[in-house]
Length: 343
Image (tube, rainbow, N blue to C red; front, side, top):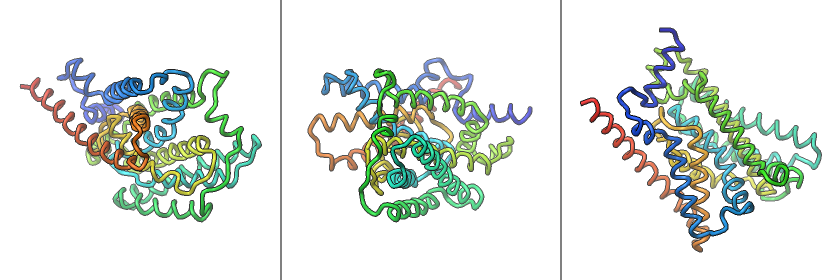
């Protein structure tokens, strides 16, 4: 059996895909299916309180634009969690991208393209730095990213000590507007991201993420390059964080050195709600996007009900605990179904 065949066999085990599953068990144990189902349930619940939810404005502002930044951040965080790690620097990288854009970008095409690419590279470099300490220095990911969170947040405050500045209107329109006056640009971006994630899932990088998260020693024995995979994982996650920072900057239209801080807890919650457990080795890249949509709609329901925004962090924390609990119980249920079929 060559390395590719071993890797495919390992990822199949890490995703708990076996011949003992019935089509029903395959369906309900699919993370993307669970995340998308919860998304549409929340959409229906929100529709009960907001009757014009399916109008073009509501769909674009609440469902698409409102969820894009968190969804991109959740995808990056999902990479790290599936590979068995934790990344606490997500909000700090988003804030860093925001202040750089706000202080440097001007209303010309050349400037906007240049600084968008620079910010993308900065995010990837920040992720790579995390990966170096985790993969090469073999330090715990939670300690590394906690430290770099403070470093990146400090740099953001040095660049922009207080909320100020503005993003050029043309840049805002590019990320938050419509193509042809009909299709939200954010929807086009998310479609491209879904296609990319589909490719990554079956690539050697995606297989490596799941394999390492499932059993790092077994992954190594089956030919997975642990260091390379972790470096690429953290670099890719940083790229998605920076893209989230770009989109969030366009949505907000101004600079704020702490703009990404509230997204830390929300991002973790979105990943878990989207069907990715915190233990690693299982989950769904695309499910994280649905998880972000669920979180955004849930906040919208609270707003419609007149709940104060100060309850937001409490709500996010409660959702995260509940999601982790439900994910654990769901995994036990699936394992019991599989065990019953083996008897």
